[in-house]
Image (tube, rainbow, N blue to C red; front, side, top):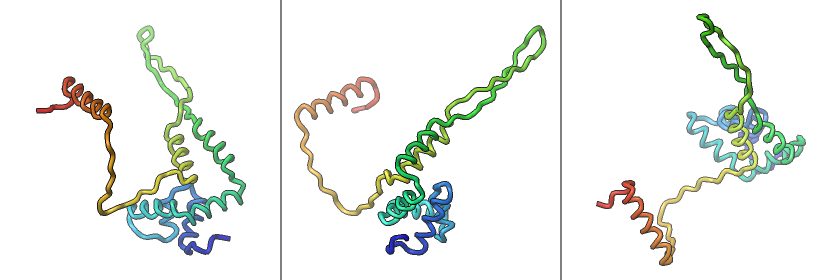
Length: 166
């Protein structure tokens, strides 16, 4: 049973998020949230970092037998995904054009990137963005050798023409 703190819309969001391909924007739209793509991205981003939603997703994953070990194994498979690539090469042989075909596998970077993104989303590894207005006071004192190192790097950059001190 879902946590009592979740709204009906949030429960629908979780359902569509988990039953689809983990697309938060699409889950937000199907759950009934309104707005353009940017607005739905923000809604999905916020929902996927809300503790009650993370806990419910974890509970449902565990209930379905999708343990962290299972997810890690599946993501390892996706990280090793390859695409079949067919290349055609044309050569001139005795005045005739001969076309050869070669088939090989290469890493599928798109699937790998999606797998990593999904893993970090499901494990709530992305850092929450916090907006702040006002002044943040922070005092840091540099040691003498740190200051010397900074000035040395500035001098090097100036000599290399990367930084113009004039």
